Length: 294
Length: 294
Image (tube, rainbow over all chains, first blue to last red; front, side, top):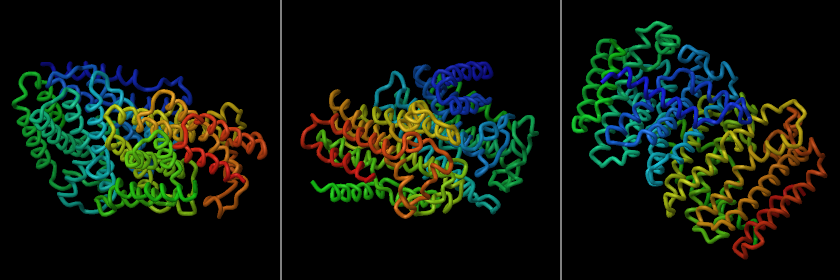
C-alpha cells in the first residue's frame, strides 16, 4: 500500500469532519469560533484521527463513525495544545510555523477556546453515529481517563512542569511521556477498537500497539527537537533543552533513543500480528512514525 | 418544611459525594489534586447540586444518583469559576472570602485544575449509577450544550468579556445572563429530571422552572454586587460597576431589577404547579433565592 496516499486521504476526510462538527465562524459569539477553528486548522498532521481510523478499520469498523470519533479526539488534542502554549505554561509563540492561539486572540480567548474544544469534543462523542449508547459511554470514560490527572494528559503536563530545570529519573520521564502524550494515543486505538465492537483479545492487541507506538512517538519527538531546524519543526528547536525539559536524548543520548524508538515500533507491530491484512495501514503507520527519525 | 435544614442536609451530602468522587490529595501528581480540592471545597453554597436533587426528587428520583450527578455539575461550575478568576479573564484575587486558585497555586496549575475538573465531571457523568446508558448520554449532551459556546456558559463568558466598558442593550444583557449562568442552572433541573426518567410534560415544567430561576438568580447576584459589603459578598463589591460590566441594575436600576426578580420567581413556581407535594423543596428554594435580595 502507498502510506503517503493513505495519510493524505484520511487527513482530508478528517478535515471535512472537523469542518462539519465545529460551530461556524458566523455563529455568535464569532470570536470564540474563529479561535477554535484557527487552532484546529493550523496545519495538524491528524495523527490521532488517522490512528483511530486505522485501528477501527483493522477490525472492520465503519469509516463514518471512526471519522466522527477521530474529529472529537483531534479537538481534544487541540485544546491541550492551546492551553500548553499559554504564557503561564510553555509560553510558545509558534506552533506548526504559525502564531499560537493566544498570540492571535489574546490569553482570555485562548483559555476559553481550549475549554470550548474540550466541551465540543464530549458533545461529539455523545453523538457518535451508528453505535449503541453503551459504546458512547465507554468511549467517554476512556477519553476522560486518558486526558485526566491520574495517569492521563493533565497529570503528565503537571509532572512535566514540575520537573523543569531539575534532573529527571528514568521512571519519572517514562511517567511523563506515558501520561502526557501516550495515554491519548493509546486511547485512539482503544476507542477505535471499541467503536468497531472489538472482542477482548482484539482490544488488548490494539491497546498494546497504541501504548508502544505512543511512547515511540514521544521519543522521536524528543529526538527531532534536538536534531531539526526551525523550518522543519515549525517551532523553535532546542527549546526542550533550553528549559531543561525531561527528554529521552537528555537522559540517554540520541543513539540510544533511536534504538529505543526502533524497539518500541517493533513491539507495536508484533502486538497486532494476529489482526491480518486489514491491519496493514496500522503497520505502515508504525514504520512511517519511525522513518521521521532517519 | 424547614428550608434552612433542607439546604444544610443536602449540602452536607453533596460535600461527601465530592469528597468521594475527587482524586485524593495523596494521588500523584499531588499539586493538581490539591488545587482541584482547594477550589471545590472553598465554601460553595452547592446551589446547583441542591437544584439537581430537588428537581429529581420532585419526580421520585433516587437521591444517590442525583447526588452523584450534582457532584459532577458542581465540578463543572468550579472549573468555570477557576478559569473566570484568572488574570487573563476577570482577574479576581478573592472568591467566597478566600484567595482564588491561581493566587494560591499559580496560573499554570489553576488553568490545569479547571481543565481537570471539567474532565473529571464528564467521567462522573459517564459513571452515573443506576441509570441506563441512554440517560448518561443524554445528560452528557445536555451539559456539553449548557456549558458550550453557542447558547452556553462559554458563549456567555465571551459575550460578557466583549461587552466590558461598552454600553449594553437589553437583548445582549439577556443573552449573557441566559447563557453564562442560566444555561447550567437550567441544565441542573433538566438533568435531575432526566435522571428521574421524567415524561415530556415533567421535563418541560422543570426546564421552564430552571430557566426562570436561573435568570432570577443572576439578576439577584447583580443586585447584591451593588448593595452588599465585601464581608457579606466574600469578594470585592462594586467590581461589576468598576469594570462597567453589563448588569441589570446598571440597565434598569435597583428597584426595577428587584421587580424583575420577583416576577421571574413567580413564573418559576407557576411552571411546576402540577408537580404536587414532592416539588415543595423546589418552591421553597425559589423563595429562598429571592429572599437574598431583601
